Amino acid sequence: MLPRYLKVLMIALAMALIPAAWGADASAAPGAPAARAPTRADRMKIRLTVEGKELMATLVHSKTTKDFISLLPLTLTMNDLFRREKFARLPRALSEEGRRTHTYAVGDMGYWSPGGDVAIYYRQDGEEIPEPGIIMIGKIDAGVEALNVPGSVKVTIEPVSK
Image (cartoon, rainbow, N blue to C red; front, side):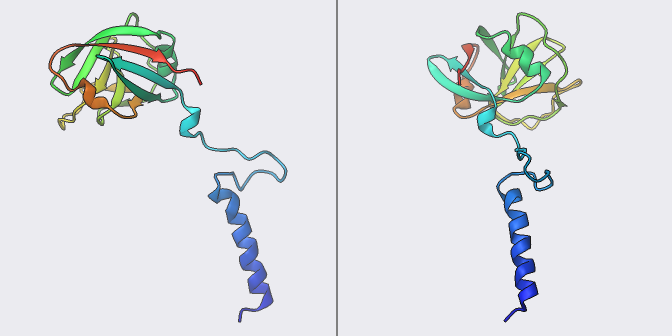
């Protein structure tokens, strides 16, 4: 049997850890509203229609993404590049104040600033993106295989109201 002071200490420790387990900031001042990390539901969604198939995508938070959203709705003819991505020139250049990367995953949507293009990666070929890299703007939630077809496809991109 544990001494009473150890039981009290264990209960106090467990109670201190509960807010952290639920995503609250345990260091917040007592009585202050707890900060929470952004959830998937807080992120903006867009709908892409590819040859009659609807895909949903979740956008990341950045100035580049905000700029992209300001162009919507868009209908683009997306060309194929290296049998890994579909890309299209945007009507105007976007802000370059987003995170750049030289790698991608299947389903990633990125902005290639040297060409002013949006790209959607539908197949991984193990190659890196050349300098200056791409700025990620979002990720296709499911169904990216609709882009894995030879040649160009017409894609309509529109915001999804909450």
